[in-house]
Image (cartoon, rainbow, N blue to C red):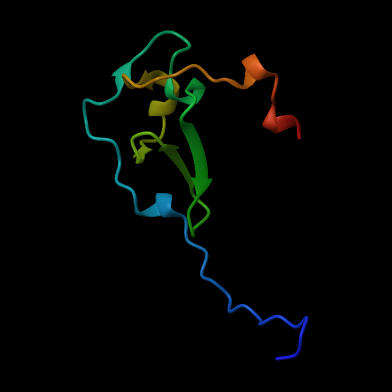
Length: 93
């Protein structure tokens, strides 16, 4: 191989690690009537699986959140989002 040349990389199969996670066990999430629900938690995230379905995830517990529960429930590990405190809004980027 000549100087300055690089090897071509083989394509890597793209897989979300979240696809292999299990759902949260029954009883972990508690119903909440306040704004303190999963969707407003610092650890809430979402991604798509290989069939383009949305997966709701909690990265602290490394589990999937059942659909709809992110709007009405929270777990004991709920934390307020920090984006407003540091004035960082990724949606606007």
